[in-house]
Image (cartoon, rainbow, N blue to C red):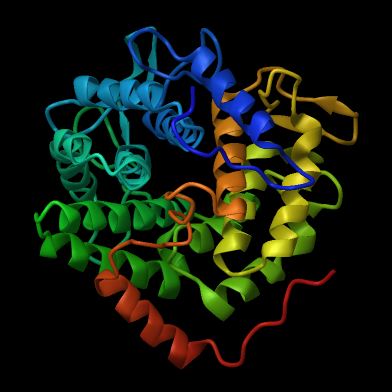
Length: 366
Protein backbone atom coordinates (compact mmCIF):
# COMPACT_ATOMS: atom_id res chain seq x y z
CA UNK A 1 0.00 0.00 0.00
CA UNK A 2 1.19 3.56 -0.63
CA UNK A 3 2.96 5.25 2.25
CA UNK A 4 1.72 8.77 1.54
CA UNK A 5 -0.93 10.77 -0.28
CA UNK A 6 -1.09 9.86 -3.95
CA UNK A 7 -1.23 12.63 -6.59
CA UNK A 8 -4.56 13.54 -8.17
CA UNK A 9 -5.51 16.21 -10.70
CA UNK A 10 -9.20 17.11 -10.32
CA UNK A 11 -11.15 16.51 -13.49
CA UNK A 12 -8.23 14.63 -15.07
CA UNK A 13 -6.96 11.86 -12.80
CA UNK A 14 -8.11 10.61 -9.41
CA UNK A 15 -5.66 9.38 -6.81
CA UNK A 16 -6.98 5.88 -7.42
CA UNK A 17 -6.21 6.20 -11.13
CA UNK A 18 -2.68 7.44 -10.47
CA UNK A 19 -2.09 4.64 -7.97
CA UNK A 20 -3.28 2.14 -10.58
CA UNK A 21 -0.62 3.48 -12.93
CA UNK A 22 2.03 3.03 -10.25
CA UNK A 23 0.86 -0.53 -9.70
CA UNK A 24 0.90 -1.20 -13.45
CA UNK A 25 4.56 -0.18 -13.50
CA UNK A 26 5.30 -2.32 -10.44
CA UNK A 27 3.66 -5.30 -12.16
CA UNK A 28 6.32 -5.16 -14.88
CA UNK A 29 9.22 -4.92 -12.44
CA UNK A 30 11.43 -7.99 -12.52
CA UNK A 31 12.64 -9.98 -9.50
CA UNK A 32 16.03 -8.31 -9.92
CA UNK A 33 14.46 -4.89 -9.39
CA UNK A 34 14.87 -3.89 -13.03
CA UNK A 35 11.94 -2.15 -14.72
CA UNK A 36 11.92 -2.93 -18.46
CA UNK A 37 10.04 -0.92 -21.04
CA UNK A 38 7.27 -3.56 -21.04
CA UNK A 39 7.06 -7.27 -20.15
CA UNK A 40 9.99 -9.09 -21.79
CA UNK A 41 11.36 -5.77 -22.99
CA UNK A 42 14.81 -4.32 -22.47
CA UNK A 43 16.01 -2.09 -19.65
CA UNK A 44 17.93 1.16 -19.94
CA UNK A 45 19.05 3.24 -16.94
CA UNK A 46 17.11 6.41 -17.80
CA UNK A 47 13.69 4.84 -18.25
CA UNK A 48 14.33 2.52 -15.30
CA UNK A 49 14.90 5.59 -13.09
CA UNK A 50 11.82 7.36 -14.46
CA UNK A 51 9.75 4.32 -13.48
CA UNK A 52 11.38 4.21 -10.03
CA UNK A 53 10.43 7.86 -9.51
CA UNK A 54 6.80 7.06 -10.32
CA UNK A 55 6.88 4.22 -7.82
CA UNK A 56 8.15 6.64 -5.17
CA UNK A 57 5.50 9.22 -6.06
CA UNK A 58 2.69 6.67 -5.74
CA UNK A 59 3.95 5.47 -2.36
CA UNK A 60 5.28 2.13 -3.61
CA UNK A 61 8.50 2.77 -1.75
CA UNK A 62 9.74 -0.80 -1.37
CA UNK A 63 9.45 -1.34 -5.11
CA UNK A 64 11.22 1.95 -5.79
CA UNK A 65 14.10 1.06 -3.48
CA UNK A 66 14.34 -2.36 -5.14
CA UNK A 67 14.79 -0.51 -8.44
CA UNK A 68 17.55 1.68 -7.01
CA UNK A 69 19.26 -1.36 -5.54
CA UNK A 70 19.36 -2.81 -9.06
CA UNK A 71 21.25 0.28 -10.16
CA UNK A 72 23.72 -0.10 -7.28
CA UNK A 73 24.36 -3.75 -8.08
CA UNK A 74 24.73 -3.39 -11.83
CA UNK A 75 26.85 -0.23 -12.05
CA UNK A 76 30.13 -0.89 -13.84
CA UNK A 77 33.52 -0.05 -12.36
CA UNK A 78 33.82 3.11 -14.44
CA UNK A 79 30.53 4.44 -13.01
CA UNK A 80 28.39 3.67 -16.06
CA UNK A 81 25.63 1.26 -17.01
CA UNK A 82 25.17 -0.47 -20.37
CA UNK A 83 22.89 1.29 -22.80
CA UNK A 84 20.62 -1.73 -23.10
CA UNK A 85 20.11 -4.92 -21.04
CA UNK A 86 17.52 -7.67 -21.42
CA UNK A 87 16.95 -10.29 -18.71
CA UNK A 88 20.37 -9.52 -17.27
CA UNK A 89 22.17 -9.90 -20.60
CA UNK A 90 23.92 -6.84 -22.05
CA UNK A 91 22.63 -6.12 -25.56
CA UNK A 92 24.52 -2.83 -26.05
CA UNK A 93 27.63 -2.26 -23.94
CA UNK A 94 28.01 1.42 -24.86
CA UNK A 95 27.01 4.01 -22.27
CA UNK A 96 24.65 6.94 -22.86
CA UNK A 97 25.85 9.85 -20.71
CA UNK A 98 22.34 11.18 -20.15
CA UNK A 99 21.18 7.73 -19.07
CA UNK A 100 24.09 7.46 -16.63
CA UNK A 101 23.51 10.92 -15.16
CA UNK A 102 19.78 10.42 -14.52
CA UNK A 103 20.07 8.23 -11.38
CA UNK A 104 21.06 11.43 -9.56
CA UNK A 105 17.57 12.80 -10.23
CA UNK A 106 15.89 9.65 -9.00
CA UNK A 107 17.99 9.33 -5.85
CA UNK A 108 17.41 12.97 -4.92
CA UNK A 109 13.68 12.64 -5.66
CA UNK A 110 13.37 9.54 -3.45
CA UNK A 111 15.30 11.22 -0.63
CA UNK A 112 13.05 14.29 -0.75
CA UNK A 113 9.95 12.10 -0.63
CA UNK A 114 11.12 9.75 2.12
CA UNK A 115 13.65 11.75 4.13
CA UNK A 116 15.67 8.53 4.33
CA UNK A 117 19.28 9.53 4.88
CA UNK A 118 20.34 5.89 5.03
CA UNK A 119 19.11 5.44 1.46
CA UNK A 120 20.95 8.59 0.37
CA UNK A 121 24.18 7.41 1.97
CA UNK A 122 23.94 4.00 0.30
CA UNK A 123 23.32 5.55 -3.11
CA UNK A 124 25.82 8.41 -2.84
CA UNK A 125 28.81 6.36 -4.12
CA UNK A 126 26.66 5.30 -7.09
CA UNK A 127 25.73 8.88 -7.97
CA UNK A 128 29.26 10.17 -7.42
CA UNK A 129 30.82 7.54 -9.71
CA UNK A 130 28.15 8.07 -12.37
CA UNK A 131 28.61 11.85 -12.43
CA UNK A 132 32.39 11.51 -12.67
CA UNK A 133 31.92 9.15 -15.60
CA UNK A 134 29.59 11.57 -17.36
CA UNK A 135 31.84 14.57 -16.82
CA UNK A 136 34.69 12.62 -18.37
CA UNK A 137 32.89 13.16 -21.69
CA UNK A 138 32.56 16.96 -21.27
CA UNK A 139 34.36 19.05 -23.86
CA UNK A 140 36.18 22.31 -23.25
CA UNK A 141 33.27 24.46 -24.39
CA UNK A 142 30.92 22.70 -21.97
CA UNK A 143 28.84 20.26 -24.02
CA UNK A 144 28.92 16.56 -23.13
CA UNK A 145 29.15 13.83 -25.76
CA UNK A 146 25.98 11.79 -25.84
CA UNK A 147 27.67 8.40 -25.54
CA UNK A 148 30.89 6.62 -24.65
CA UNK A 149 31.58 3.56 -26.77
CA UNK A 150 32.28 0.10 -25.41
CA UNK A 151 35.98 0.82 -25.88
CA UNK A 152 35.82 3.86 -23.60
CA UNK A 153 36.02 6.65 -26.20
CA UNK A 154 33.40 9.44 -26.37
CA UNK A 155 31.52 9.50 -29.67
CA UNK A 156 32.38 13.12 -30.48
CA UNK A 157 28.78 14.33 -30.83
CA UNK A 158 26.53 16.12 -28.36
CA UNK A 159 22.73 16.28 -28.23
CA UNK A 160 20.76 19.29 -27.03
CA UNK A 161 18.07 17.22 -25.32
CA UNK A 162 20.55 14.88 -23.65
CA UNK A 163 22.75 17.72 -22.37
CA UNK A 164 19.66 19.55 -21.11
CA UNK A 165 18.68 16.49 -19.11
CA UNK A 166 22.23 16.16 -17.77
CA UNK A 167 21.98 19.79 -16.64
CA UNK A 168 19.04 18.77 -14.43
CA UNK A 169 20.87 15.67 -13.22
CA UNK A 170 23.91 17.70 -12.18
CA UNK A 171 21.74 20.06 -10.14
CA UNK A 172 20.20 17.08 -8.35
CA UNK A 173 23.64 15.52 -7.80
CA UNK A 174 24.89 18.77 -6.28
CA UNK A 175 21.86 18.97 -4.01
CA UNK A 176 22.52 15.43 -2.84
CA UNK A 177 26.20 16.22 -2.27
CA UNK A 178 25.30 19.30 -0.24
CA UNK A 179 22.77 17.34 1.82
CA UNK A 180 25.39 14.73 2.68
CA UNK A 181 28.15 17.24 3.40
CA UNK A 182 30.20 16.17 0.37
CA UNK A 183 30.90 19.41 -1.53
CA UNK A 184 31.79 19.01 -5.20
CA UNK A 185 33.10 22.35 -6.52
CA UNK A 186 34.27 20.72 -9.73
CA UNK A 187 30.71 19.68 -10.50
CA UNK A 188 29.55 23.26 -9.99
CA UNK A 189 32.06 24.45 -12.58
CA UNK A 190 30.96 21.71 -14.99
CA UNK A 191 27.32 22.69 -14.48
CA UNK A 192 28.14 26.33 -15.18
CA UNK A 193 29.92 25.44 -18.41
CA UNK A 194 27.10 23.15 -19.51
CA UNK A 195 24.43 25.75 -18.76
CA UNK A 196 26.36 28.36 -20.71
CA UNK A 197 26.70 26.22 -23.83
CA UNK A 198 23.02 25.22 -23.68
CA UNK A 199 21.97 28.87 -23.66
CA UNK A 200 24.60 30.44 -25.90
CA UNK A 201 25.95 27.85 -28.37
CA UNK A 202 23.30 25.96 -30.35
CA UNK A 203 26.00 25.13 -32.89
CA UNK A 204 27.55 22.79 -30.29
CA UNK A 205 24.80 20.22 -30.82
CA UNK A 206 23.68 17.94 -33.63
CA UNK A 207 20.70 19.41 -35.46
CA UNK A 208 17.65 17.45 -34.27
CA UNK A 209 15.05 20.19 -34.47
CA UNK A 210 12.39 17.93 -35.99
CA UNK A 211 12.14 16.32 -32.54
CA UNK A 212 9.96 17.97 -29.93
CA UNK A 213 12.48 17.03 -27.22
CA UNK A 214 14.98 19.49 -28.67
CA UNK A 215 12.30 22.14 -28.39
CA UNK A 216 11.23 21.76 -24.76
CA UNK A 217 14.15 20.01 -23.05
CA UNK A 218 16.23 23.14 -22.42
CA UNK A 219 13.24 24.33 -20.38
CA UNK A 220 12.59 20.98 -18.70
CA UNK A 221 16.26 20.60 -17.76
CA UNK A 222 16.37 24.03 -16.15
CA UNK A 223 18.87 25.77 -18.43
CA UNK A 224 16.20 28.12 -19.84
CA UNK A 225 13.42 29.31 -17.55
CA UNK A 226 11.25 32.35 -16.87
CA UNK A 227 10.38 34.64 -19.76
CA UNK A 228 13.00 33.02 -21.98
CA UNK A 229 11.48 29.61 -21.33
CA UNK A 230 7.96 30.80 -22.10
CA UNK A 231 9.16 32.35 -25.35
CA UNK A 232 10.91 29.14 -26.36
CA UNK A 233 7.77 27.07 -25.80
CA UNK A 234 5.63 29.60 -27.65
CA UNK A 235 7.89 29.66 -30.72
CA UNK A 236 7.14 26.10 -31.88
CA UNK A 237 3.87 25.39 -30.12
CA UNK A 238 1.92 25.02 -33.35
CA UNK A 239 4.58 22.70 -34.82
CA UNK A 240 4.24 20.12 -32.08
CA UNK A 241 0.98 20.44 -30.14
CA UNK A 242 -2.18 18.82 -31.54
CA UNK A 243 -5.26 20.17 -29.84
CA UNK A 244 -7.15 17.54 -27.88
CA UNK A 245 -4.52 14.83 -28.41
CA UNK A 246 -1.16 15.92 -26.99
CA UNK A 247 2.30 16.65 -28.35
CA UNK A 248 3.95 15.19 -31.42
CA UNK A 249 7.25 13.38 -31.14
CA UNK A 250 8.47 14.81 -34.46
CA UNK A 251 7.14 17.70 -36.48
CA UNK A 252 6.83 15.76 -39.76
CA UNK A 253 4.68 12.79 -38.68
CA UNK A 254 1.06 12.66 -37.45
CA UNK A 255 2.05 10.91 -34.20
CA UNK A 256 1.42 12.15 -30.68
CA UNK A 257 3.26 10.47 -27.83
CA UNK A 258 2.33 10.29 -24.18
CA UNK A 259 5.75 10.69 -22.59
CA UNK A 260 6.68 13.75 -24.67
CA UNK A 261 3.30 15.26 -23.86
CA UNK A 262 3.84 14.79 -20.14
CA UNK A 263 7.39 16.13 -20.30
CA UNK A 264 5.96 19.19 -22.02
CA UNK A 265 3.44 19.39 -19.15
CA UNK A 266 6.37 19.45 -16.71
CA UNK A 267 8.11 22.11 -18.80
CA UNK A 268 5.02 24.30 -18.84
CA UNK A 269 4.59 23.88 -15.10
CA UNK A 270 8.19 25.01 -14.60
CA UNK A 271 7.47 28.34 -16.35
CA UNK A 272 4.11 28.93 -14.63
CA UNK A 273 1.91 27.93 -17.57
CA UNK A 274 -0.24 25.78 -15.31
CA UNK A 275 -3.55 25.94 -17.18
CA UNK A 276 -1.97 24.91 -20.46
CA UNK A 277 -0.11 22.12 -18.68
CA UNK A 278 -3.33 20.74 -17.19
CA UNK A 279 -5.06 20.85 -20.58
CA UNK A 280 -2.27 18.81 -22.15
CA UNK A 281 -2.33 16.21 -19.39
CA UNK A 282 -6.06 15.84 -19.92
CA UNK A 283 -5.62 15.65 -23.70
CA UNK A 284 -3.33 12.61 -23.60
CA UNK A 285 -5.63 10.45 -21.47
CA UNK A 286 -6.88 8.72 -24.63
CA UNK A 287 -3.72 6.61 -24.28
CA UNK A 288 -4.82 5.22 -20.91
CA UNK A 289 -5.88 1.58 -20.54
CA UNK A 290 -8.25 0.27 -17.84
CA UNK A 291 -5.41 -1.17 -15.74
CA UNK A 292 -3.71 2.24 -15.49
CA UNK A 293 -1.01 1.58 -18.07
CA UNK A 294 -0.50 3.87 -21.07
CA UNK A 295 0.10 3.32 -24.74
CA UNK A 296 3.21 4.95 -26.13
CA UNK A 297 1.61 6.95 -28.92
CA UNK A 298 -1.24 7.50 -31.34
CA UNK A 299 -1.06 7.96 -35.12
CA UNK A 300 -3.98 10.32 -35.51
CA UNK A 301 -3.97 10.19 -39.32
CA UNK A 302 -4.86 6.48 -39.06
CA UNK A 303 -6.73 6.57 -35.76
CA UNK A 304 -4.46 3.85 -34.36
CA UNK A 305 -2.14 3.44 -31.43
CA UNK A 306 1.47 2.77 -32.32
CA UNK A 307 3.48 0.93 -31.17
CA UNK A 308 1.21 -1.61 -29.50
CA UNK A 309 3.28 -1.88 -26.31
CA UNK A 310 2.24 -0.01 -23.19
CA UNK A 311 5.50 1.40 -21.89
CA UNK A 312 6.35 1.77 -18.22
CA UNK A 313 8.09 5.07 -18.82
CA UNK A 314 4.99 6.58 -20.43
CA UNK A 315 2.96 5.73 -17.34
CA UNK A 316 5.78 7.08 -15.18
CA UNK A 317 5.74 10.42 -17.02
CA UNK A 318 1.99 10.67 -16.36
CA UNK A 319 2.50 10.09 -12.63
CA UNK A 320 5.28 12.68 -12.39
CA UNK A 321 3.26 15.24 -14.33
CA UNK A 322 0.24 14.65 -12.08
CA UNK A 323 2.40 15.11 -8.99
CA UNK A 324 3.92 18.32 -10.33
CA UNK A 325 0.53 19.85 -11.17
CA UNK A 326 -1.14 18.76 -7.95
CA UNK A 327 1.78 19.66 -5.65
CA UNK A 328 1.10 16.44 -3.73
CA UNK A 329 4.28 14.64 -2.67
CA UNK A 330 7.36 16.36 -1.20
CA UNK A 331 9.12 15.57 -4.50
CA UNK A 332 6.58 17.35 -6.69
CA UNK A 333 8.94 20.25 -7.43
CA UNK A 334 11.93 18.27 -8.65
CA UNK A 335 11.42 19.41 -12.25
CA UNK A 336 10.70 22.99 -11.21
CA UNK A 337 14.10 23.04 -9.52
CA UNK A 338 12.77 23.35 -5.97
CA UNK A 339 15.26 22.38 -3.28
CA UNK A 340 17.98 22.02 -5.90
CA UNK A 341 21.45 23.48 -5.58
CA UNK A 342 21.72 26.94 -7.09
CA UNK A 343 25.26 26.27 -8.28
CA UNK A 344 27.29 28.44 -10.62
CA UNK A 345 25.01 27.70 -13.56
CA UNK A 346 21.91 29.17 -11.99
CA UNK A 347 23.72 32.32 -10.92
CA UNK A 348 25.03 32.66 -14.47
CA UNK A 349 21.62 31.85 -15.92
CA UNK A 350 19.94 34.59 -13.94
CA UNK A 351 22.55 37.10 -15.00
CA UNK A 352 22.16 36.10 -18.64
CA UNK A 353 18.40 36.23 -18.49
CA UNK A 354 18.43 39.71 -16.96
CA UNK A 355 20.77 40.89 -19.69
CA UNK A 356 19.35 39.11 -22.70
CA UNK A 357 15.70 38.25 -22.45
CA UNK A 358 14.13 41.67 -22.60
CA UNK A 359 10.46 42.15 -21.74
CA UNK A 360 8.40 39.23 -20.40
CA UNK A 361 6.87 36.88 -22.93
CA UNK A 362 3.11 36.69 -23.21
CA UNK A 363 1.30 33.56 -22.10
CA UNK A 364 0.90 30.86 -24.69
CA UNK A 365 -2.01 31.58 -26.99
CA UNK A 366 -5.38 30.05 -26.22
